[in-house]
Image (cartoon, rainbow, N blue to C red; front, side, top):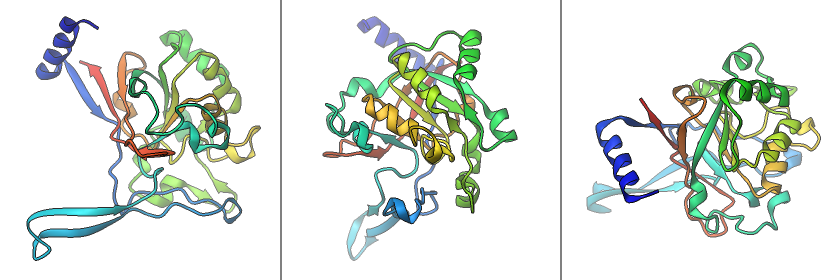
Length: 261
């Protein structure tokens, strides 16, 4: 991009011709976190905010806190090393991923009506191809996000996780859909649920394909996204930069999108 192009973008941001959409859920003690069955090991803690000082005897002129939270809490970025299939990839941690990869075009597949009718809705290859026939092919190096409007449940852990005695019920991709998207050369997959997989993904082959296959291929994930209903199917730019945690497996992010209009 030339300096003139950057100046045009800057002017468009200042004039409002290009708008910034916040795709991030609020992060705090009420943020829903994923709960795993005991056989899968430990769970991430809920967010805790601890006061260091608040214009008081512990710091009369300033206020600041320290935080207790997991890397994969709230709206967050999954690095390849998050999953065993990606543990040996190069540049697989949040501090080694090239920063160029944090900014990319984004495709938004709207399946909100399907998810409203069926919380166990699964995105298939056929459904993706139907979307491509209408909106154009998914480009290599771009993000693919599935809109389900699930973020509207985020105010309640119970409704957001939507679990019963049979396990969680939330939408997501089939293994075949992830394989298809990888064949297109995408940079990452994301959605509005607590993780990047469907609630039923533990029973798929392979289990948890959005994690297993995407991270094995050195690609990225975004979970607990919000406001995808404000994005066009194509044409937006996604900015999702994790904290530069040393050997980080992921990080909460402030995910943003640039749109025209």
